[in-house]
Length: 395
Image (cartoon, rainbow, N blue to C red; front, side, top):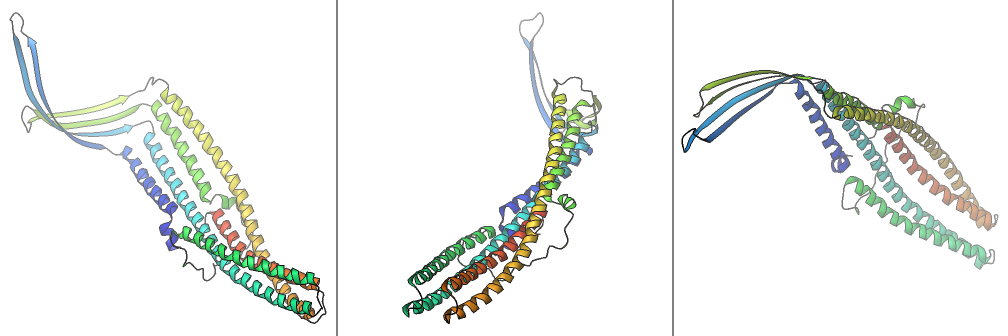
C-alpha cells in the first residue's frame, strides 16, 4: 500500500492539483484586502520651439525624479470578490473529490492485482496437482486396458485428459508471469520476477443492505459534480459583476523634484466610482453563458447521481452474490472430492463404469477450478464495491 501510494502518478497528480486549488482558494481573499505598491521614475525632457519674431530656436530641458507609495482599496466590485472566494472553495472541493476517487481506484487496482497474483500462484499448484492425478488415472486405465478390462476408447480419452491437464499447467505458468507484471505495474516497479503474493486480503461480510441514495451523496464522483455546480453558481455571480458599478479608494504619497532624492512632497487621494453603461454586450452575453453553464452543471449532477445509484446497487449485488457463491462452490468442492474418491475405489474394483468414473473425475476438476475462481472473484467484487463508494485501503 505504501509503495503503490508513493509511486502512483495519478495520486501524485491529484495531490498536486489539490495543493494548487488550495493556494488559489486562499488567493481569492485578496480582493477584500488593500493593495500596496511602490514606484520610482526618472524623466529626461527636451523641448525645442521657434522663437516668435526671431530667426532661431529656444530650448528647454530638465530631469525629473519621482518616488511614491500607492495604497488602494476596493470598496465594491459588483460582488465578484465573494464569487471568487466561493468559486475557489468549490474548485478545492473538486480537487479533494478527485484525490479521493484516485485513492479508491488505486485501492481497487492494488487488490485486484494482488489477488490476481495469488490466484495465478494457486492455479499453478492446482493444475500441477490435476496433472499428477491425471497421470495416476492414466496408469490405472492403462493397466485395466492391458488386462482386457477396459476398451481402447477409454484409454485414449484418459490420455487426452492428461494432455489437457499438461496444457492447462503450461498456460497457468504464463498467466503467473502476466499477473506478476500487472502487480508490478500497480506498484510502479520495473522488475517482476521476484514478486510473490503471500497471505490473504482482509475481507468483510456484506451485512444489511445499505441506504444506496445516502451512499450516493458520499461518493467522490458525486461530490465532484456537486462542487462543479457550486463553482458554476459562483460563475454566474462573477459574470454579472460586470453589470454593477465599482467603487475604489486609492491614495499615494511621494516626492518629486529635479534631484535625487526629490524633496517636493506629493499627496493624492482618489475616490473613483465607475458605472458601466455599455460594453458592447460582453457582460450581458457572459452572464447568459454562465447561466447556461450552470444549467449544464446541474444536469450533470443529476445524471451523475442516477448513474452512481445504479452502479452502487449493481456492485453491491455482485459483492453479496460473490460471498454466497464462494460458500456454494466450497460445499460442491467438498462433495465432489468425496464422490471422486469413492468412485476411484469403485472403478479400481470393477464396480463402476469408466464413463461414470470419468464424469466424476471431470466434475472434481471443474469444481476445484470454480472454487479457486470464486475466491478471486470474492476479493475482486468487494474491491469493486469499495471503489464504487469511493473507499479503499489507501489513505
